[in-house]
Image 1 (tube, rainbow, N blue to C red):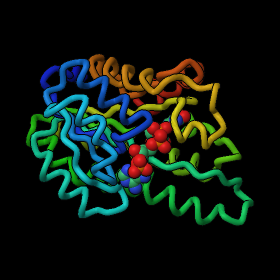
Image 2 (image 1 turned 60 degrees about the horizontal axis):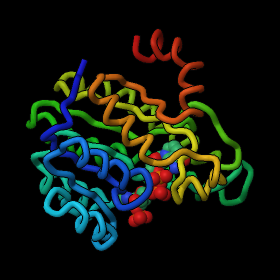
Image 3 (image 1 turned 90 degrees about the vertical axis):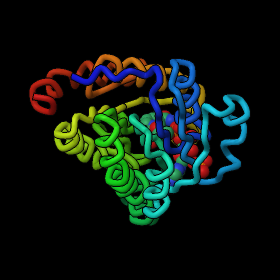
Image 4 (image 1 turned 90 degrees about the horizontal axis):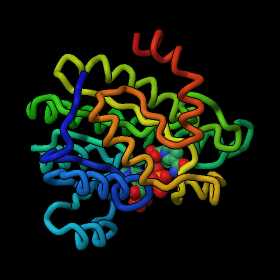
Length: 243
Ligand SMILES: NC(=O)c1ccc[n+]([C@@H]2O[C@H](COP(=O)([O-])OP(=O)(O)OC[C@H]3O[C@@H](n4cnc5c(N)ncnc54)[C@H](OP(=O)(O)O)[C@@H]3O)[C@@H](O)[C@H]2O)c1
């Protein structure tokens, strides 16, 4: 399959200002990317990254809930050959909580509609630039529901389903798709989900993405909890999902 080269790549990262997104920017610069477009909702939130990496990192304003901003992002980053849709939100709601319908709607808009919006904006860009790769941050919650944040899990299951369809559709234009399924990671979102002190650092996910793009895998289960789930899932994934 793909064997994407990271060196000299031009990479778009959504939600690049903190958490896993920031670690992805750092890892791609470290592994030789020519340019990283840090897609952020507030430009000033990427100031520290731009100061640290100089002209290698270019901040661009983009919001997954604002389709026009993603079209503009694709215009400004028209030389990108790797797109990493990392941005996402998690709200805590059990299925019978009063706020569950509202949280589901919000999470679907960012985590699922947002995925389709950015994929549709960038598919022609990736095609023009030789295929490249599209990376989607899914979760172990794409495969198993955790009742305390049930609506988030539903949104990540839907995003995983669309990622599988994108894999097939984008193959026609030689764009490789990678579906990333972290377990608990120490970020603001991890804190919100109650993982503080139990998660692994965001760099584990970022380095996993670099390695998986090089190997051409479709699934990545980066941290130890995710790896356990990935092992249990492997035979189904090989025979049914990727078969
Ligand atoms: N942390 C975990 O344990 C874990 C586990 C599995 C999967 N994941 C997934 O990994 C990804 C990154 O998670 P994280 O832990 O790094 O989260 P985080 O620390 O909460 O950071 C979320 C990022 O997404 C951005 N964002 C939120 N809504 C957005 C929107 N509408 N448009 C554009 N950007 C938006 C945020 O920007 P602002 O700063 O402007 O809010 C921020 O940069 C997410 O997709 C998440 O679901 C995380």
